Amino acid sequence: MKTRGWPPFRRRLWQRNYYEHIIRHDESLNRIRRYIAENPLRWHLDRENPQAVDKDDLWEKLFTQEGSP
Image 1 (cartoon, helix red, strand yellow):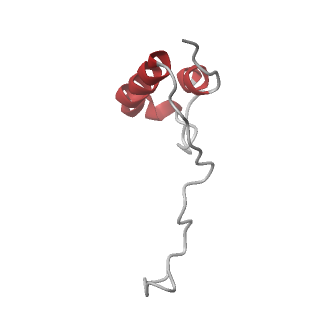
Image 2 (cartoon, one colour; image 1 turned 90 degrees about the vertical axis):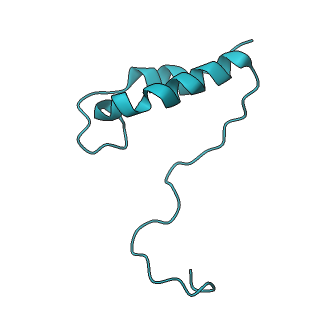
């Protein structure tokens, strides 16, 4: 920010807990596509939502286990 002359930014610039995920199998790709398609409907469960009403089991299922071929 300083080297580019951008105005001060009081919040975090990078996404917290960001990680890369290498997609190795069609099954993994399909799970990620499903998550992207359904994500807006699941905001009430999103762990980034301060007013989340419950745990998002779909996120846990899709992203805590690696898909097998």
